[in-house]
Amino acid sequence: MLRAEPFFGSTVAGRHSVSERRWAQLLKREIALRFPGGPIAIEAHGKWRDPQRGTLVRELAKIVIVVTTDDVSARERIEAAAAAYKQRFKQKSVGIVTRSVCAAF
Image (cartoon, rainbow, N blue to C red; front, top):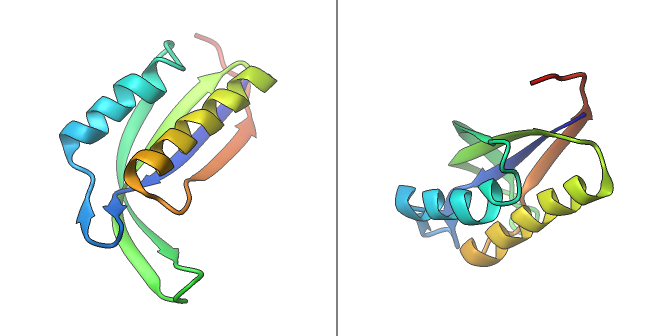
């Protein structure tokens, strides 16, 4: 199976954060619909280096854990959820860690 962990930063255009209400809407509409088996969302404190300015940016983040079949469709759904987040909240990137796992439910 595939374990995917997209990292969603919360700062929008360097000015404000994604509200809990808007995050819950995105989780429901863009992630849970694509992965009805149930994603897990974890709050985190993240850092990333802004490549344009070369500065270290600290922000609250959400890490979503999805365990699903390892196929092209699952990887496309993960990318689609990340693309929806980037578009909706004007994000430059969404980090995604994937790995093959042995899992049973």
